[in-house]
Length: 174
Image (cartoon, one colour):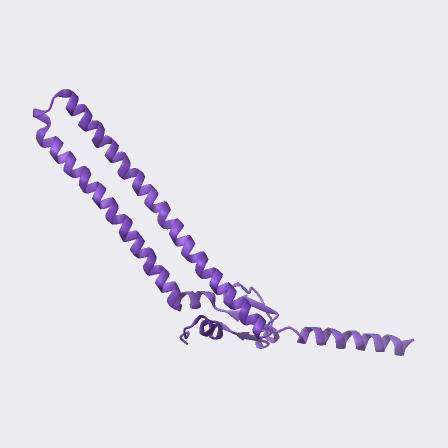
């Protein structure tokens, strides 16, 4: 009976050890990859261009309003009361349009930023997944999302950040 129990215990420990050793764990420094990835820098440039474009449209609206306001102030005394009211109403509508454009521009910039980030994130996730499958990794974690690991687990895991960066087409700095 004792022999059977010892045999079962030994078998259990052996199989547990074999299962534990079958894991291949990697981690990726996502923040570093995103900060150095040329595609990320291109997305930043695209967003900045979009912001400049919207700012130029805003400045054109403001300039148009200021020109009309100056014209109104210079010619106000020679205008009839009805023309004054109509001009003031147009100026008020232009002012509202400028305020609405500011709010809309902020929302458009946020949406564009989100779209660019999601595109980068999807490509990065697909690359990490493909790399993991190609290299038989069972788990890949973001480096800064692991809250606890033992010394043994750390030594059994690989930093695959530079390999993922290479797969994305660039070299990660040290």
